[in-house]
Length: 371
Image 1: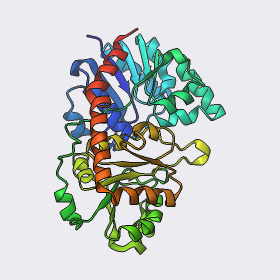
Image 2 (image 1 turned 30 degrees about the vertical axis):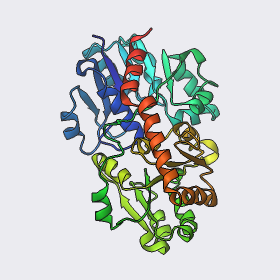
Image 3 (image 1 turned 180 degrees about the horizontal axis):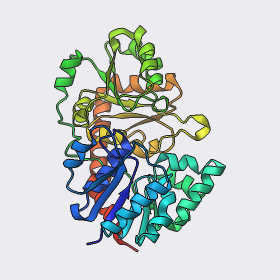
């Protein structure tokens, strides 16, 4: 059986959507067909011991395309007789592609996310991305938005769609959110939940600015923000005048995420593009996890986020920079529970049919074995 070396900066136990995506790709392969090379992270020893395949950690928490990283990766290609190398994020580690081919890899696959689409807009970064693409057999993209951006730099014949999957057995409508509601004192109040890293792009601040409008229409509504990140202090200051209509739960274990989604009636993450198009949403797998959980979603229009929503069917895509537009979408769903439930049911059906991990695993296998 052929074996793939996955070289990635993004891997658990570090939390994040890309980390979950790359871990899912590794997990869907037979254990003796994959090796992972990733940075050290707190808790990694225990995590790695639970994986059925080898995980080799770099001594530091960040890997760059340096000679030392190239040397270690090349040694792993030789030691484990890997005929394929998969870069968990094409930029910047994909620059190591030629060195790993020289070490014995016959096939090089580059996985891209939102930041590679941003690189395609910046002159120097665009040239580096072109070099990465030159040495790849396959460059994946998440959806229509990222494909259009990457096609400016990468030959169209190398581009193949590979988006994250959703474990529909874990994220499901009958997950129990009662414990979360009880612990946070939510009772039977209508809840809008946002589960994401606390960074400006994700739009938690816009939710808070929109919240007074929502409360005027739905006075007992609660906004539940779940996640950790550098923006927490700012969000806490914005939330303070809103009293007990806002809960900031902080980061929670990944195993608890389905329960936090189940505690909500509507999911909202009004992401917005920042920094002149450099800070952009690649897809937003959490929208799909929310849909699989039976929730209607309110998504921002940044980047590839609309690819994760069937507009008007599974949720609503809004201008994430407009508190008024965000509030209008939330009020419409909270005030019409039947419509919200119908969107959630349609979302569950769509994700099960189009985004289940079994489908992603099959696509990834074909991508590794073709050519």
